[in-house]
Length: 432
Image 1 (cartoon, rainbow, N blue to C red):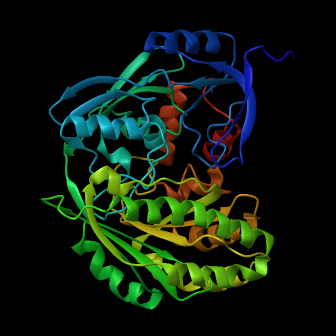
Image 2 (cartoon, rainbow, N blue to C red):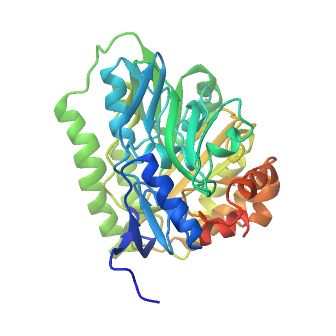
């Protein structure tokens, strides 16, 4: 088979997934519909790609890759309901909302994903009063496999499948979000012992808007981040302190530390201890998205597991022994966040309060034994892997973890019976 002249190589942000595929770049919803109709009629497959920030192969195209970067405009703004094209990056959305006195109620720690990619994989932040970002969605517009343009609001039976749809039901082209009035966050960040964090976290979670913590492997040290809404932006972070902490230390210095650890693994426990001890407390206010989101330039590979919140102590207790048993060293801290339940069928947080355990390895450092060990720990607890982070689950063992799994498949069979939008990853996690 001859490779089309407009085929291009694609690599994801983590540089652990790549493919060569013919590229489609529609500039309108009608163009998306025409391309889908033509591809389906020719028996071809389309995989839509956003910013490439998933570590799984969810966005890997083996035939045609559709890029939605030209579909990045505001469609309408009606009170707190904001409709945007699905290829808009979250960073652009956040700036647009701020200009109009609005904000997303919660965000993750980066803003490079597209709106479509973020909601389709159930990207999340932290805060027990919030679900995933997809829980803010009021309606979505999909181009389905027959080329039809379908809008699903909350009242539509397809809605709970279409929002966190993994790209399996169609091309997501528009999203309506329920936003909130713009707000200021007070950030309180401080180093603590892991024992003190575990002793206090169950009290902090309901008492604060957003709580997360990081544990530094090979140490008893952690850092805690607590964000709360406040009426005034009266404690801004100085430009120098912001550069020092978030740019120089968190990116430039940390990348150098990881390079040393990759070359000299025996030094990693000492480096981890030094990093934990070097942390200093800071308290400041800022625009909500500026506090939630940070620049992340150090490349890594990641696994993140959602578990029932009550199971967190079991996982945290087992992690030090798990890490000590590995045939290599772990360079990144372990991140722990919390969310409330939502009602979207393939959301990790479906129907329960959640704790998320995120583990990372620096680019070029082995990770599979680490990730498979964490998965073996979390799966029996009812754990659900983040769709955009590395995992090894299949449809067979994911089905019992999601009460509405078969309901989702029924919608998929109706909207894409010929599997125009599938790839090897979706065949694995949803079945072929």
